[in-house]
Image (cartoon, rainbow, N blue to C red):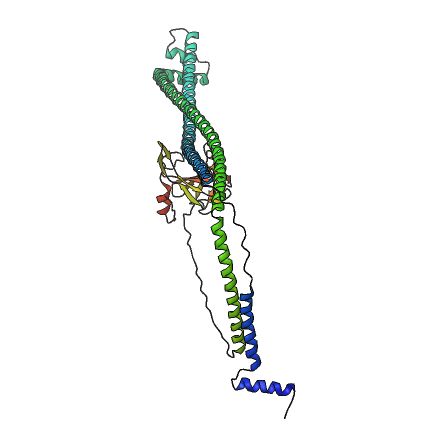
Length: 451
Protein backbone atom coordinates (compact mmCIF):
# COMPACT_ATOMS: atom_id res chain seq x y z
CA UNK A 1 0.00 0.00 0.00
CA UNK A 2 1.40 3.38 -1.01
CA UNK A 3 2.18 5.85 1.69
CA UNK A 4 3.21 9.52 1.81
CA UNK A 5 2.49 12.50 -0.50
CA UNK A 6 1.94 10.34 -3.58
CA UNK A 7 -0.85 8.45 -1.97
CA UNK A 8 -2.47 11.63 -0.75
CA UNK A 9 -2.41 13.14 -4.26
CA UNK A 10 -4.03 10.05 -5.72
CA UNK A 11 -6.72 10.03 -3.06
CA UNK A 12 -7.46 13.71 -3.81
CA UNK A 13 -7.72 13.00 -7.52
CA UNK A 14 -9.99 10.02 -6.94
CA UNK A 15 -12.31 12.14 -4.87
CA UNK A 16 -12.50 14.83 -7.56
CA UNK A 17 -13.36 12.18 -10.16
CA UNK A 18 -16.16 10.75 -8.01
CA UNK A 19 -17.58 14.24 -7.31
CA UNK A 20 -16.88 14.09 -3.58
CA UNK A 21 -15.67 17.30 -1.96
CA UNK A 22 -12.42 16.86 -0.03
CA UNK A 23 -12.45 17.57 3.63
CA UNK A 24 -9.66 20.13 3.30
CA UNK A 25 -11.66 22.22 0.78
CA UNK A 26 -14.67 22.24 3.07
CA UNK A 27 -12.49 23.46 5.84
CA UNK A 28 -11.04 26.24 3.67
CA UNK A 29 -14.48 27.44 2.65
CA UNK A 30 -15.70 27.33 6.20
CA UNK A 31 -12.69 29.36 7.24
CA UNK A 32 -13.29 31.95 4.57
CA UNK A 33 -16.93 32.37 5.53
CA UNK A 34 -16.09 32.50 9.21
CA UNK A 35 -13.40 35.08 8.53
CA UNK A 36 -15.79 37.21 6.58
CA UNK A 37 -18.30 37.00 9.40
CA UNK A 38 -15.64 37.87 11.91
CA UNK A 39 -14.56 40.85 9.83
CA UNK A 40 -18.12 42.17 9.88
CA UNK A 41 -18.69 41.48 13.56
CA UNK A 42 -15.28 42.59 14.67
CA UNK A 43 -15.57 46.04 13.03
CA UNK A 44 -15.67 48.54 15.90
CA UNK A 45 -18.50 51.07 16.06
CA UNK A 46 -17.52 54.41 14.48
CA UNK A 47 -16.85 57.23 16.87
CA UNK A 48 -19.58 59.84 16.63
CA UNK A 49 -18.12 63.37 16.18
CA UNK A 50 -19.49 66.25 18.16
CA UNK A 51 -22.49 67.88 16.48
CA UNK A 52 -21.73 71.18 14.71
CA UNK A 53 -23.02 74.55 15.84
CA UNK A 54 -26.61 75.32 14.94
CA UNK A 55 -27.21 78.91 13.65
CA UNK A 56 -30.27 80.74 14.84
CA UNK A 57 -33.36 81.47 12.77
CA UNK A 58 -32.52 85.17 12.87
CA UNK A 59 -29.12 84.58 11.29
CA UNK A 60 -30.62 82.48 8.51
CA UNK A 61 -33.41 85.02 7.91
CA UNK A 62 -30.88 87.86 7.70
CA UNK A 63 -28.73 85.90 5.22
CA UNK A 64 -31.79 85.06 3.14
CA UNK A 65 -32.83 88.74 3.09
CA UNK A 66 -29.33 89.71 1.96
CA UNK A 67 -29.50 87.11 -0.79
CA UNK A 68 -32.91 88.34 -1.95
CA UNK A 69 -31.68 91.94 -2.04
CA UNK A 70 -28.60 90.98 -4.06
CA UNK A 71 -30.71 88.91 -6.44
CA UNK A 72 -33.09 91.84 -6.93
CA UNK A 73 -30.16 94.13 -7.78
CA UNK A 74 -28.78 91.56 -10.20
CA UNK A 75 -32.19 91.31 -11.87
CA UNK A 76 -32.47 95.08 -12.11
CA UNK A 77 -29.01 95.55 -13.61
CA UNK A 78 -29.55 92.57 -15.91
CA UNK A 79 -32.60 94.33 -17.34
CA UNK A 80 -30.48 97.45 -17.88
CA UNK A 81 -27.78 95.40 -19.59
CA UNK A 82 -30.37 93.79 -21.87
CA UNK A 83 -31.78 97.21 -22.74
CA UNK A 84 -28.32 98.63 -23.41
CA UNK A 85 -27.46 95.65 -25.58
CA UNK A 86 -30.69 96.03 -27.58
CA UNK A 87 -30.00 99.75 -28.01
CA UNK A 88 -26.45 98.96 -29.14
CA UNK A 89 -27.79 96.51 -31.69
CA UNK A 90 -30.32 99.09 -32.94
CA UNK A 91 -27.65 101.77 -33.33
CA UNK A 92 -25.33 99.30 -35.01
CA UNK A 93 -28.02 98.50 -37.57
CA UNK A 94 -28.54 102.20 -38.19
CA UNK A 95 -24.78 102.66 -38.59
CA UNK A 96 -24.66 99.84 -41.11
CA UNK A 97 -27.54 101.42 -43.05
CA UNK A 98 -25.88 104.85 -42.91
CA UNK A 99 -22.66 103.35 -44.21
CA UNK A 100 -24.45 101.70 -47.12
CA UNK A 101 -26.28 104.97 -47.91
CA UNK A 102 -22.96 106.84 -47.88
CA UNK A 103 -21.42 104.34 -50.32
CA UNK A 104 -24.44 104.70 -52.62
CA UNK A 105 -24.24 108.52 -52.48
CA UNK A 106 -20.52 108.39 -53.18
CA UNK A 107 -21.13 106.24 -56.24
CA UNK A 108 -23.90 108.61 -57.46
CA UNK A 109 -21.62 111.61 -57.03
CA UNK A 110 -18.88 109.93 -59.06
CA UNK A 111 -21.35 109.16 -61.86
CA UNK A 112 -22.65 112.78 -61.83
CA UNK A 113 -19.08 114.11 -61.90
CA UNK A 114 -18.29 111.99 -64.96
CA UNK A 115 -21.44 113.30 -66.70
CA UNK A 116 -20.49 116.90 -65.86
CA UNK A 117 -16.99 116.38 -67.24
CA UNK A 118 -18.43 114.93 -70.45
CA UNK A 119 -20.87 117.87 -70.81
CA UNK A 120 -18.03 120.36 -70.27
CA UNK A 121 -15.97 118.65 -72.99
CA UNK A 122 -18.90 118.78 -75.43
CA UNK A 123 -19.47 122.47 -74.62
CA UNK A 124 -15.82 123.20 -75.33
CA UNK A 125 -16.09 121.37 -78.66
CA UNK A 126 -19.16 123.44 -79.62
CA UNK A 127 -17.42 126.66 -78.62
CA UNK A 128 -14.37 125.70 -80.69
CA UNK A 129 -16.60 125.05 -83.71
CA UNK A 130 -18.24 128.49 -83.34
CA UNK A 131 -14.81 130.10 -83.06
CA UNK A 132 -13.62 128.39 -86.25
CA UNK A 133 -16.73 129.54 -88.15
CA UNK A 134 -16.32 133.09 -86.92
CA UNK A 135 -12.66 133.11 -87.91
CA UNK A 136 -13.47 132.09 -91.46
CA UNK A 137 -16.17 134.76 -91.70
CA UNK A 138 -13.76 137.30 -90.28
CA UNK A 139 -11.15 136.34 -92.86
CA UNK A 140 -13.66 136.97 -95.61
CA UNK A 141 -14.64 140.28 -94.05
CA UNK A 142 -11.02 141.39 -93.91
CA UNK A 143 -10.54 140.45 -97.55
CA UNK A 144 -13.63 142.39 -98.49
CA UNK A 145 -12.51 145.44 -96.56
CA UNK A 146 -9.05 145.42 -98.04
CA UNK A 147 -10.49 145.23 -101.51
CA UNK A 148 -13.24 147.73 -100.97
CA UNK A 149 -16.46 147.59 -99.08
CA UNK A 150 -18.50 147.00 -102.25
CA UNK A 151 -16.31 144.12 -103.47
CA UNK A 152 -18.42 141.89 -105.67
CA UNK A 153 -17.96 138.22 -106.25
CA UNK A 154 -16.59 138.84 -109.76
CA UNK A 155 -14.18 141.51 -108.53
CA UNK A 156 -12.95 139.26 -105.75
CA UNK A 157 -12.18 136.52 -108.24
CA UNK A 158 -10.55 138.88 -110.79
CA UNK A 159 -8.30 140.39 -108.15
CA UNK A 160 -6.78 136.99 -107.39
CA UNK A 161 -3.03 136.84 -108.03
CA UNK A 162 -3.05 133.34 -109.35
CA UNK A 163 -4.95 130.10 -109.78
CA UNK A 164 -4.36 128.97 -106.19
CA UNK A 165 -5.72 132.20 -104.73
CA UNK A 166 -8.56 132.12 -107.22
CA UNK A 167 -9.59 128.66 -106.04
CA UNK A 168 -9.28 129.70 -102.40
CA UNK A 169 -11.39 132.87 -102.90
CA UNK A 170 -13.99 130.94 -104.87
CA UNK A 171 -14.30 128.37 -102.08
CA UNK A 172 -14.53 131.07 -99.43
CA UNK A 173 -17.14 133.01 -101.36
CA UNK A 174 -19.17 129.85 -101.89
CA UNK A 175 -18.92 128.96 -98.20
CA UNK A 176 -19.92 132.46 -97.08
CA UNK A 177 -22.65 132.76 -99.62
CA UNK A 178 -24.24 129.41 -98.92
CA UNK A 179 -23.62 128.65 -95.29
CA UNK A 180 -22.13 131.54 -93.35
CA UNK A 181 -25.34 132.63 -91.69
CA UNK A 182 -26.97 129.19 -91.33
CA UNK A 183 -23.87 127.47 -90.06
CA UNK A 184 -23.08 130.17 -87.56
CA UNK A 185 -26.67 130.20 -86.31
CA UNK A 186 -26.77 126.41 -85.93
CA UNK A 187 -23.43 126.41 -84.15
CA UNK A 188 -24.61 129.11 -81.79
CA UNK A 189 -27.78 127.11 -81.05
CA UNK A 190 -25.69 123.99 -80.40
CA UNK A 191 -23.36 125.90 -78.12
CA UNK A 192 -26.29 127.32 -76.14
CA UNK A 193 -27.88 123.87 -75.84
CA UNK A 194 -24.60 122.36 -74.71
CA UNK A 195 -24.14 125.16 -72.21
CA UNK A 196 -27.57 124.39 -70.78
CA UNK A 197 -26.69 120.69 -70.64
CA UNK A 198 -23.46 121.48 -68.85
CA UNK A 199 -25.36 123.64 -66.36
CA UNK A 200 -27.78 120.80 -65.66
CA UNK A 201 -24.88 118.36 -65.28
CA UNK A 202 -23.12 120.69 -62.86
CA UNK A 203 -26.32 121.10 -60.86
CA UNK A 204 -26.78 117.32 -60.72
CA UNK A 205 -23.17 116.92 -59.63
CA UNK A 206 -23.60 119.56 -56.93
CA UNK A 207 -26.79 117.87 -55.70
CA UNK A 208 -25.00 114.51 -55.60
CA UNK A 209 -22.08 116.06 -53.72
CA UNK A 210 -24.49 117.62 -51.21
CA UNK A 211 -26.25 114.25 -50.79
CA UNK A 212 -22.89 112.59 -50.25
CA UNK A 213 -21.93 115.16 -47.63
CA UNK A 214 -25.27 114.68 -45.88
CA UNK A 215 -24.86 110.90 -45.96
CA UNK A 216 -21.35 111.21 -44.60
CA UNK A 217 -22.58 113.43 -41.77
CA UNK A 218 -25.30 110.90 -40.95
CA UNK A 219 -22.69 108.14 -40.97
CA UNK A 220 -20.42 110.08 -38.62
CA UNK A 221 -23.37 110.74 -36.29
CA UNK A 222 -24.38 107.06 -36.31
CA UNK A 223 -20.80 105.97 -35.64
CA UNK A 224 -20.61 108.38 -32.71
CA UNK A 225 -23.86 107.06 -31.27
CA UNK A 226 -22.59 103.49 -31.52
CA UNK A 227 -19.33 104.41 -29.79
CA UNK A 228 -21.20 106.18 -26.98
CA UNK A 229 -23.58 103.25 -26.55
CA UNK A 230 -20.68 100.82 -26.50
CA UNK A 231 -19.14 102.80 -23.65
CA UNK A 232 -22.47 102.83 -21.77
CA UNK A 233 -22.92 99.11 -22.35
CA UNK A 234 -19.43 98.43 -21.01
CA UNK A 235 -20.09 100.49 -17.88
CA UNK A 236 -23.38 98.74 -17.15
CA UNK A 237 -21.79 95.34 -17.79
CA UNK A 238 -19.07 96.19 -15.25
CA UNK A 239 -21.73 97.12 -12.70
CA UNK A 240 -23.52 93.82 -13.34
CA UNK A 241 -20.27 91.94 -12.70
CA UNK A 242 -20.00 93.65 -9.30
CA UNK A 243 -23.60 92.77 -8.39
CA UNK A 244 -22.99 89.20 -9.54
CA UNK A 245 -20.10 88.99 -7.09
CA UNK A 246 -22.28 90.36 -4.30
CA UNK A 247 -24.99 87.81 -5.08
CA UNK A 248 -22.44 85.03 -5.12
CA UNK A 249 -21.14 86.11 -1.69
CA UNK A 250 -24.70 86.25 -0.31
CA UNK A 251 -25.41 82.80 -1.71
CA UNK A 252 -22.28 81.43 -0.09
CA UNK A 253 -23.16 82.92 3.27
CA UNK A 254 -26.70 81.55 3.16
CA UNK A 255 -25.46 78.14 2.09
CA UNK A 256 -22.97 78.11 4.95
CA UNK A 257 -25.68 78.89 7.51
CA UNK A 258 -28.09 76.41 6.02
CA UNK A 259 -25.32 73.86 5.94
CA UNK A 260 -24.61 74.44 9.61
CA UNK A 261 -28.31 74.08 10.39
CA UNK A 262 -28.46 70.80 8.49
CA UNK A 263 -25.14 69.52 9.82
CA UNK A 264 -26.59 67.43 12.63
CA UNK A 265 -29.00 65.64 10.31
CA UNK A 266 -26.18 65.13 7.87
CA UNK A 267 -24.01 63.76 10.70
CA UNK A 268 -26.68 61.22 11.59
CA UNK A 269 -27.17 60.27 7.97
CA UNK A 270 -23.43 59.93 7.48
CA UNK A 271 -23.09 57.71 10.55
CA UNK A 272 -25.89 55.44 9.35
CA UNK A 273 -24.41 55.35 5.87
CA UNK A 274 -20.98 54.41 7.13
CA UNK A 275 -22.41 51.62 9.27
CA UNK A 276 -24.45 50.34 6.34
CA UNK A 277 -21.39 50.52 4.13
CA UNK A 278 -19.36 48.49 6.61
CA UNK A 279 -22.07 45.84 6.77
CA UNK A 280 -22.34 45.79 3.00
CA UNK A 281 -18.57 45.40 2.73
CA UNK A 282 -18.61 42.39 5.02
CA UNK A 283 -21.46 40.84 3.09
CA UNK A 284 -19.71 41.54 -0.17
CA UNK A 285 -16.53 39.91 1.11
CA UNK A 286 -18.48 36.80 2.04
CA UNK A 287 -20.12 36.67 -1.36
CA UNK A 288 -16.81 37.11 -3.12
CA UNK A 289 -15.26 34.30 -1.07
CA UNK A 290 -18.15 32.01 -1.95
CA UNK A 291 -17.93 32.98 -5.61
CA UNK A 292 -14.21 32.34 -5.64
CA UNK A 293 -14.75 28.87 -4.22
CA UNK A 294 -17.45 28.14 -6.75
CA UNK A 295 -15.20 29.33 -9.57
CA UNK A 296 -12.43 27.07 -8.36
CA UNK A 297 -14.79 24.12 -8.61
CA UNK A 298 -16.15 25.07 -12.00
CA UNK A 299 -15.14 22.82 -14.89
CA UNK A 300 -16.84 24.50 -17.85
CA UNK A 301 -15.76 27.63 -19.70
CA UNK A 302 -17.76 30.43 -21.17
CA UNK A 303 -17.59 32.33 -24.51
CA UNK A 304 -19.30 35.22 -26.28
CA UNK A 305 -19.44 37.17 -29.36
CA UNK A 306 -20.15 40.60 -30.45
CA UNK A 307 -20.91 42.68 -33.45
CA UNK A 308 -20.49 46.16 -34.70
CA UNK A 309 -22.05 48.62 -36.99
CA UNK A 310 -21.38 51.93 -38.60
CA UNK A 311 -22.99 54.86 -40.27
CA UNK A 312 -22.04 57.07 -43.13
CA UNK A 313 -23.15 60.47 -44.19
CA UNK A 314 -22.73 61.96 -47.61
CA UNK A 315 -23.32 65.37 -48.95
CA UNK A 316 -23.44 66.85 -52.37
CA UNK A 317 -21.92 69.96 -53.81
CA UNK A 318 -23.52 72.35 -56.22
CA UNK A 319 -23.37 75.89 -57.61
CA UNK A 320 -24.39 77.37 -54.23
CA UNK A 321 -22.90 76.81 -50.75
CA UNK A 322 -23.26 78.20 -47.22
CA UNK A 323 -21.21 81.38 -46.68
CA UNK A 324 -19.80 80.09 -43.37
CA UNK A 325 -20.50 77.73 -40.49
CA UNK A 326 -21.99 78.90 -37.21
CA UNK A 327 -25.19 79.88 -35.43
CA UNK A 328 -27.76 82.19 -36.97
CA UNK A 329 -27.86 85.15 -34.60
CA UNK A 330 -29.99 87.70 -36.49
CA UNK A 331 -32.45 87.44 -39.37
CA UNK A 332 -33.49 89.73 -42.23
CA UNK A 333 -36.12 92.35 -41.43
CA UNK A 334 -36.95 95.80 -40.11
CA UNK A 335 -36.34 96.55 -36.44
CA UNK A 336 -36.68 99.91 -34.70
CA UNK A 337 -37.58 101.43 -38.05
CA UNK A 338 -34.30 100.32 -39.68
CA UNK A 339 -33.88 97.54 -42.20
CA UNK A 340 -31.42 94.81 -41.26
CA UNK A 341 -30.66 93.96 -44.87
CA UNK A 342 -29.12 90.52 -44.38
CA UNK A 343 -28.62 87.63 -41.99
CA UNK A 344 -25.95 87.32 -39.29
CA UNK A 345 -24.12 84.05 -38.62
CA UNK A 346 -22.22 84.06 -35.32
CA UNK A 347 -18.90 82.20 -35.41
CA UNK A 348 -15.42 82.53 -33.85
CA UNK A 349 -12.96 84.97 -35.40
CA UNK A 350 -11.00 83.21 -38.14
CA UNK A 351 -13.82 80.88 -39.23
CA UNK A 352 -13.57 80.49 -43.05
CA UNK A 353 -15.96 82.50 -45.24
CA UNK A 354 -16.80 81.05 -48.66
CA UNK A 355 -18.17 82.48 -51.90
CA UNK A 356 -21.81 81.41 -52.06
CA UNK A 357 -21.80 81.35 -55.85
CA UNK A 358 -19.35 81.77 -58.72
CA UNK A 359 -18.78 85.27 -60.01
CA UNK A 360 -16.53 88.32 -60.07
CA UNK A 361 -15.35 90.35 -57.07
CA UNK A 362 -16.77 93.89 -57.32
CA UNK A 363 -14.81 95.25 -54.38
CA UNK A 364 -12.95 93.96 -51.34
CA UNK A 365 -11.60 95.95 -48.44
CA UNK A 366 -12.70 98.82 -46.26
CA UNK A 367 -16.47 99.38 -46.18
CA UNK A 368 -18.20 101.87 -43.89
CA UNK A 369 -20.13 100.13 -41.13
CA UNK A 370 -18.69 96.72 -42.02
CA UNK A 371 -15.02 97.43 -41.35
CA UNK A 372 -13.95 95.04 -44.09
CA UNK A 373 -16.34 93.55 -46.65
CA UNK A 374 -16.31 91.59 -49.91
CA UNK A 375 -18.83 92.20 -52.72
CA UNK A 376 -19.32 89.54 -55.44
CA UNK A 377 -21.43 89.86 -58.58
CA UNK A 378 -22.49 86.28 -59.35
CA UNK A 379 -22.81 84.75 -62.77
CA UNK A 380 -26.53 84.51 -61.96
CA UNK A 381 -26.79 88.33 -61.77
CA UNK A 382 -27.20 88.51 -57.99
CA UNK A 383 -24.76 90.47 -55.81
CA UNK A 384 -23.73 88.92 -52.48
CA UNK A 385 -22.10 90.89 -49.66
CA UNK A 386 -19.92 89.49 -46.85
CA UNK A 387 -19.47 92.06 -44.03
CA UNK A 388 -17.47 92.43 -40.79
CA UNK A 389 -14.79 90.01 -42.06
CA UNK A 390 -11.47 89.79 -40.24
CA UNK A 391 -9.32 89.14 -43.32
CA UNK A 392 -10.07 88.95 -47.04
CA UNK A 393 -8.12 87.03 -49.68
CA UNK A 394 -9.53 88.40 -52.96
CA UNK A 395 -9.43 91.69 -54.86
CA UNK A 396 -11.68 93.58 -57.27
CA UNK A 397 -11.95 92.03 -60.71
CA UNK A 398 -10.91 88.56 -59.55
CA UNK A 399 -12.94 85.49 -60.51
CA UNK A 400 -14.09 83.23 -57.66
CA UNK A 401 -15.84 79.87 -57.62
CA UNK A 402 -18.65 78.70 -55.35
CA UNK A 403 -17.13 77.25 -52.18
CA UNK A 404 -13.82 79.12 -52.56
CA UNK A 405 -12.60 80.73 -49.34
CA UNK A 406 -12.63 84.48 -49.73
CA UNK A 407 -12.28 85.73 -46.14
CA UNK A 408 -12.55 84.85 -42.44
CA UNK A 409 -15.22 85.77 -39.89
CA UNK A 410 -14.35 88.89 -37.90
CA UNK A 411 -15.64 91.56 -35.56
CA UNK A 412 -14.71 94.70 -37.46
CA UNK A 413 -16.85 97.76 -38.02
CA UNK A 414 -20.11 98.32 -36.15
CA UNK A 415 -20.33 94.83 -34.68
CA UNK A 416 -21.51 93.57 -31.28
CA UNK A 417 -19.65 90.26 -31.56
CA UNK A 418 -17.82 88.02 -34.05
CA UNK A 419 -20.16 87.18 -36.92
CA UNK A 420 -20.63 87.28 -40.69
CA UNK A 421 -23.22 89.68 -42.11
CA UNK A 422 -24.47 88.19 -45.43
CA UNK A 423 -26.62 90.08 -47.95
CA UNK A 424 -28.21 89.34 -51.33
CA UNK A 425 -29.14 92.02 -53.91
CA UNK A 426 -31.18 90.91 -56.95
CA UNK A 427 -30.84 94.02 -59.13
CA UNK A 428 -27.08 93.86 -59.51
CA UNK A 429 -26.42 96.82 -57.20
CA UNK A 430 -24.49 96.12 -53.98
CA UNK A 431 -26.29 98.85 -52.01
CA UNK A 432 -29.99 98.75 -52.91
CA UNK A 433 -32.88 96.28 -53.31
CA UNK A 434 -32.05 94.05 -50.36
CA UNK A 435 -33.76 90.66 -50.26
CA UNK A 436 -34.02 87.96 -47.59
CA UNK A 437 -31.00 85.63 -48.01
CA UNK A 438 -32.56 82.72 -46.03
CA UNK A 439 -35.25 81.63 -48.54
CA UNK A 440 -32.93 82.62 -51.38
CA UNK A 441 -30.35 80.09 -50.15
CA UNK A 442 -32.93 77.39 -49.42
CA UNK A 443 -34.42 77.77 -52.91
CA UNK A 444 -30.96 76.96 -54.29
CA UNK A 445 -30.50 73.79 -52.27
CA UNK A 446 -28.55 75.27 -49.31
CA UNK A 447 -29.90 74.12 -45.93
CA UNK A 448 -30.01 77.43 -44.07
CA UNK A 449 -31.78 77.30 -40.71
CA UNK A 450 -32.58 79.76 -37.95
CA UNK A 451 -34.60 82.26 -40.01
